[in-house]
Image 1 (cartoon, rainbow, N blue to C red):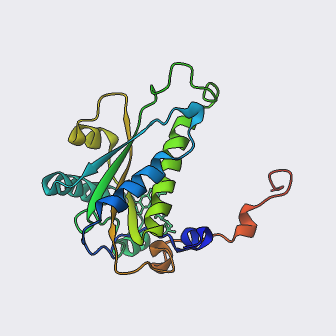
Image 2: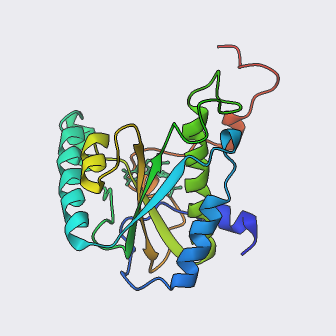
Length: 207
Ligand SMILES: Cc1cc2nc3c(=O)[nH]c(=O)nc-3n(C[C@H](O)[C@H](O)[C@H](O)COP(=O)(O)O)c2cc1C
């Protein structure tokens, strides 16, 4: 696939995972693509935990569904009804889960380019995730990012040392297809903004 095709085909997948195996060489290419991401001060502050154990996944799934209820209870009745139809994860159906973490101490204490913007480390981890997402798409696989969790819970579940932050739980695997429209748009939760609304000339637009 051409890069632009990959970018525009990529979807957040929840319902279309088949559970079919991922060849080792494919997974290796995807992980190497993630690891090739740019990072502030060349800190490469990410780690990737591959989770196949059904018990670990079931425990995480249960926690995510508790957090789903927490979010649902904060919604007004119309939004809650809409949300009730939206699937928010494919933890159990996908082939593999990958937890991505951020180690702010890596490459420190003097991380070149991070002295004024602490979040630059987190930005780097997100770039690794995006590389992974696009590489998986180019390989014909789906990815779903799950963020309905408390960091402390996930850190404890996976034995992540204090100070290292779990940034994402990603569901990965073969899919039946990619939808052409994001799930949230299909379910009437929210529409995408046109690019023209996001691009400004010279300054923030006058209110
Ligand atoms: C940081 C981040 C966290 C997300 N968390 C969730 C999540 O917990 N559950 C979910 O269903 N989708 C999650 N998504 C997917 C978004 O809903 C999705 O990217 C967005 O609706 C646009 O759809 P698309 O990725 O298919 O273009 C997350 C995406 C990002 C970038």
